[in-house]
Length: 342
Image 1: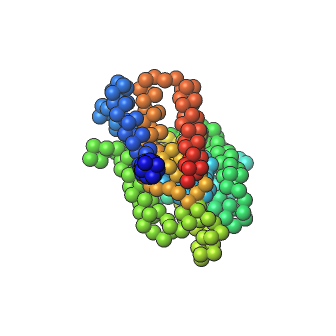
Image 2: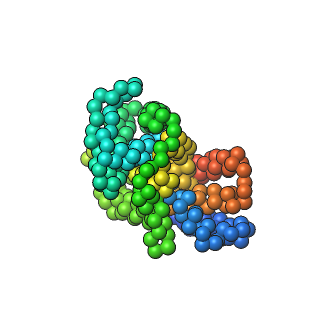
Image 3: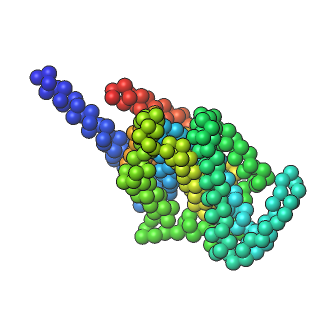
């Protein structure tokens, strides 16, 4: 009888570890459909999809960071930087972009006159700028051995400051109305950003679960020294992971700028906590070595569903902060209980 109970407990534990949070999301979703007015309407579900796109996209690379035993606090600042850069550059279509500092222009760079080409170049420059920040983070963390918390906290402040300097602390509207296509177009009844998010889930799911790089990432998070002894280039892989984090965060910023047709220097504040909470809530371990793309998807959906339900119930913003913090704390406690139980 005792063995039977132990076997049942182990089966339940295995089921909970593999699909427990998915069950929680399904129950939460059904509860919202029943108790929250208009939650299951078509327009609201489309709005829910748009609500989670930024967190959903960036969580894909945060999954890699956390699976390798690190995290990145600079993602919100990188997102805002990309918004500001892409909006600013598009407005220079057919003109020369002044390059300088402290109120002085050192030289100017001609920008494409073709509106479509100008949008593409502006988007690529913004994404590459995010990649450079990510590369810097990875180099300092992996090569110089500085703690990820300190490094990304510093770059979070530096990049946010640069956003305000570049934009003079003001939102930058985009003059070209065609730029709104990326963030507002509808494909097969769903907004394009939702399809972009799903595409990121597929790409990074394959990268983590079906590639040598993904297996190495999990190995680094599980035991960094053992991974190094096994021949894995830990320094190189961690630099790649943080560079990808910067690139994807900036890409999400370009999509967000297209949605709102403006670059907001104060956008993304607190985004890093939402992304980390979504990952941990889904089952990604804070200590590294454990994580799946399903974890990211479920965690993102839970976070988005809770926020959407609170919006529909007209819960005041201040209370929403309390709820978000409580969810983050619950996610961390859940991660801790899993480690102790393991």
